Image (tube, rainbow, N blue to C red; front, side, top):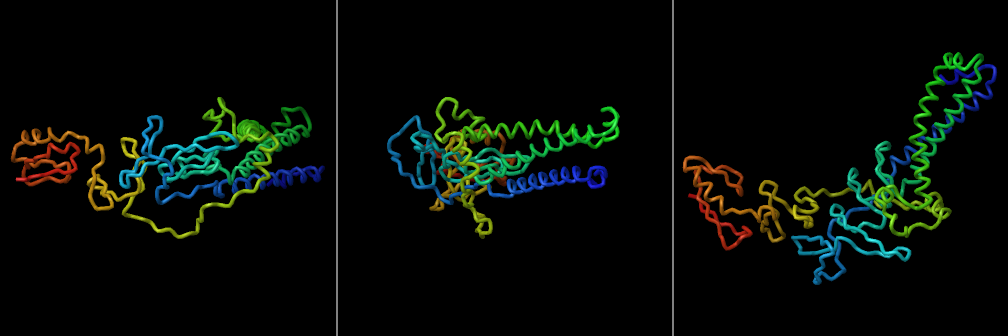
Length: 344
């Protein structure tokens, strides 16, 4: 279609412009494919909790603890690491069961921890991290260059027409549409490109910049403008830590869980979905803390008011009984783990 629009009076000019546009378009699609189809730097999850190398006998109100109720293992929510002489905190991920490396974050959309997490880009459908960030910069840079290229040569194509400007624009509607489209698009991709040039020069990520991570303290990763650009474009991209062709065994009777309603961490264990309880290694079931703290004393009086002819609802058996039971509860155990039910 574009070949038919080439003028016969100057074919060399038109063919050169067409080839330049095709090269930029192919580069744009290649960078898009490399950005969306590449592993951004997913950190493999742990199947077990990491061992704690800190003392847990000293209580501390300033530290939030991760509590595993099954193994009675306590892990600190954060750890301090020294990077280039600066102390930074790394957080524990309840989903991946690991301490995130510096500058890593858990993506709520992909549900993975990403190395040097920048952001999740909805336009490419992928997280932008350590392993695909250079290709993302190439994608937005080539898109900006392509918009400017089409905008400029569309104007030149209009100005080459004979007659005044309005008559030339009326005879070349395609160039006018491309001018309007590229003028609007260049503000988005061009502004995004300039923003990431600033981030690279200061060695920041989008996630860190939006959270004002280094506004009140020095950035320990900033090495200067030249070294920052070398780190992004001329450093070796690490190999992927995930083998996507590996066969994995799916565990159907256990559920990986984060934290309960009280904020305490719950590790990997077997759950009884109908009962809402959790089984420990010895086979004993433990109710969640929200059910343990309920007052079951008022349940006896409410059941007596219903009468003997109506079936009552048992919150622990989740089924209707043929007759209204009389429930006696052990008052000595407020937790409610050792309940005694006498049905009559």
